Length: 201
Image (cartoon, rainbow, N blue to C red):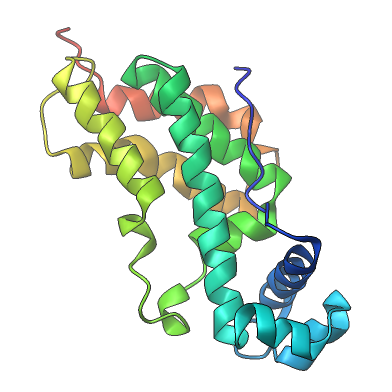
């Protein structure tokens, strides 16, 4: 596969980027509730006044970080769906993207996929209701409609198709899997596709 993998950690300005990078590192190292604005000031080198100007408070930083990461993932999935015509190819590219991104940006991937955001962002919908995950279900819906995947509830088939690869991402982030995720791609994909493919098509 040779699809470009956009970075999950892009932001609009150097100041904003420094704050979000510092917050991501601190939230990952010591947790959201054990991180205070002065910690972010020290790590980022950005003044407390500038942080409050850009984000309002610590929750605002977490919300901006989460939104940026989801936007980056959604942009990557949108590009995949635009570039690849068939649902099977799209789904494979999504799995490849998830594996490569977890290796390239493990802290960002862990914050987006593993953190219990609703404990400190109670107004945010669950990650599985976010736009990137909606796109993943849309891929499955198109696959069913085109006869590439067998009939069924798109939510159930999406869980069967992407659930295993996402679990492997978690195992890698938890240092259970010893090798880089792309080395598992072929085996993981074959198992995932077998669960949903239309063997009669």
